[in-house]
Image (cartoon, rainbow, N blue to C red):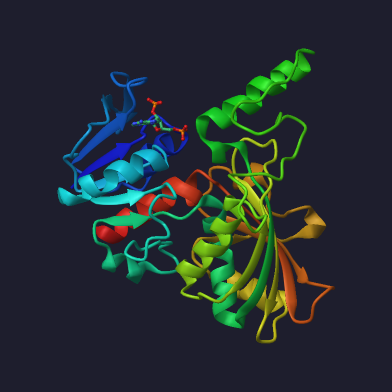
Length: 328
Ligand code: A2P
């Protein structure tokens, strides 16, 4: 089993190397690829120094290629890599909406991965974190309408986004002008309701990814979902506040029971002890934290809940490795 990571030096790539090691993924060879900027540098895997190679303009000798170098690279090269016999697990949005490409969260639709034709897509991080908690509730009570607002970390914009938060916060504290490159506006001490580009319907593409991808992963093309996606000045782990109207009778206690045995979920819901999902506690965890589960006061038969999940793990690297585990 030969595994290659394209974008190994990025925020997701670095996590991938760690997750492969921690889950003792059965691989014989790991090859790391990035751009010319970091080709020749070394990274550690299983106590071995591996040299980062320049991503080739052509085939990659691997059985599984994890592509985490952005949509442009994936769009251009995934088919070539797949044509040489590799299965490409793609982290970008380049292939997610292609009907021939399965979009997989192993806790939800593992069987769909079997139908791949060389490319399997990894969902958007915000979608993945919500879906892991929403799926068991949907199965039990039938989710009819879903309204979600997100609190997304700078890690969603990669290593550069995290660095911008640190650098610009330092500028602010030093009394220097606060700039921005990765984000549309200065990120320190701000919230920005703009992630990805605006669409004709006035939603952003990030918001529509949650709609399109949840429907595809659940196999529910008509599910009614609305999202407001917001960037906040945290380093990593996305949070989301969800309101869900159900078809069948539901209660917070019944929901808690369902979630308690759901894979990929950790119920953190003890308000009296100030225990609820938060980015600081969700960071580094494989499971998505779910809490603040309560009866919604505005709609009948509806629940509110709050989730926090590590954007770089369940939202990216961990889900990729879980997909690779399905393949072996
Ligand atoms: P490099 O470190 O050489 O720039 P992030 O999402 O954290 O920004 O990381 C992006 C990853 O994708 C990095 O590993 C980066 O490598 C890599 N990358 C960016 N552009 C290319 C490209 N054109 N070809 C191959 N790898 C790329």
